[in-house]
Amino acid sequence: MSAANLNVSKYRSRSSTQSLIGFSISFESGPLLARGFGLEHLRDLLVRFARPLLRSGADLAYAGDWKERDDNFTYELLRLISAEQEDNSLAGPDTDLTIGRLRNHLAWPHYLAVTPRVEAQWIQCCRIIRITQEIAGIDPASIASDDEPRGTERYRLNSAIALSQLRRLAVSGMVVSVNGTPETYTVPGLTARIVLGGKTKDFSGFVPGIFEEALVMLENKRPLYILGGFGGAAEILARTLLGQDPQELDVSWQEGATPHLKTLRSLSDSRPLPSGVRPTGESLRALRERLQLARPTLSTSLNTGLEEAETKELLTTRDMRRAVQLVFKGLAQSAGFVLLRT
Image (cartoon, rainbow, N blue to C red; front, top):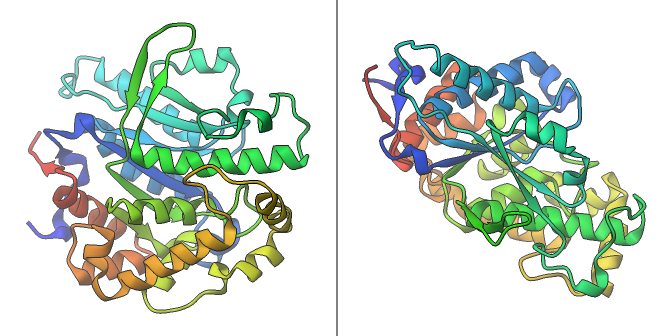
């Protein structure tokens, strides 16, 4: 069956109950509008990816916050999972499915905004994985209180460190303690990551989140699907892979576009960073080198499971249907998702 004829609603994976598929997605209106897309298109694309994965039993990983906004994809995923669980319980033809859930990695201090009531409301759909300052490896003497004023030097540096460690731990996996008990549970590392949109400036942390998430996936040789045709940070990654040298990967451009980076550079120069955390310049250099090294063999370097021409097509296509087809074809090869008749 050719890729053009694939029906993604038919995907099942006999081993996907252990799969964790990461999403790197955020809404940047400028690049999308310039291509004739809006927020609804991005939501539609997310659902096209997420629904078949959930029905296959795979869990989804997304590090979005819980603020009530139109462009908050955390709630989009939660509502989708809830609807799939409800459909699965109505004695229909798919009642034997194991519906995946959301693994929501949240770094300090962002998880503090999630109230117990809201967490309990979605407990059947989501498990929050809190990356505390202690888990992030911050020295005990430097740990900030949870009511640390926003904007202080310690707040800025510790939150950037926690974000960076979150992105690393999401890929490697981790063991988490259950509050108030001696029990622990294992959070698996990512099987693959799907990347689209994303900020290139005015972000939190040392570098744009999608840049760092892509870097960690490349370093760990995990399947990485970059949809560059929809703009944002994903487009910068795609352009670099295809032979260009975008200014957004230059530390001087980033420090000019995102003022807090100069403060972070000064703070990180004065205090050792935990193992695994890289300051802006080092992180951007590592990413640029990885992307440049990947250019001769994109399919192999990104572990897409696709042919070379298909991997290049995925980096540039603006056809949502085709992008979904390519990603699922790649996952069938790289992560064991197989096409089964229902």
